[in-house]
Amino acid sequence: MRRIKRAVLPPATQKALALRQAKADEKRQAGLLNVGTEWDAGRKTVAFRTVLDSLRQMAGRRERCMYCCDSHGCDIEHFWPKSRYSDRMFV
Image (cartoon, rainbow, N blue to C red):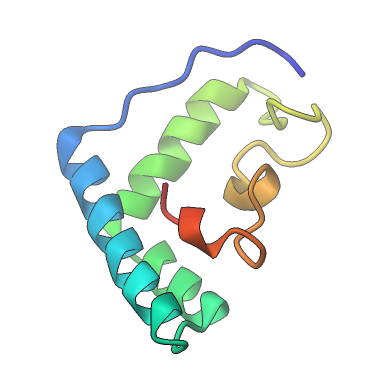
């Protein structure tokens, strides 16, 4: 693992992600969460693009993963796979 300086997301992005996570949590608790569908919908938002831009900046010129230094640096779910940790999908 290499050391990185974590980018701070704008407050509007943090709020949008928290709302999306809350909705996903409600669906999960009701047994209605489809992780793939929810993730695909989230990927189309401005908040998600802001997260990707931040990851690209943190990943460096080669855009390699901060954890394994091998995978693409903006593969968001590399550390917390959404299928297993749906309670952290948008955290």
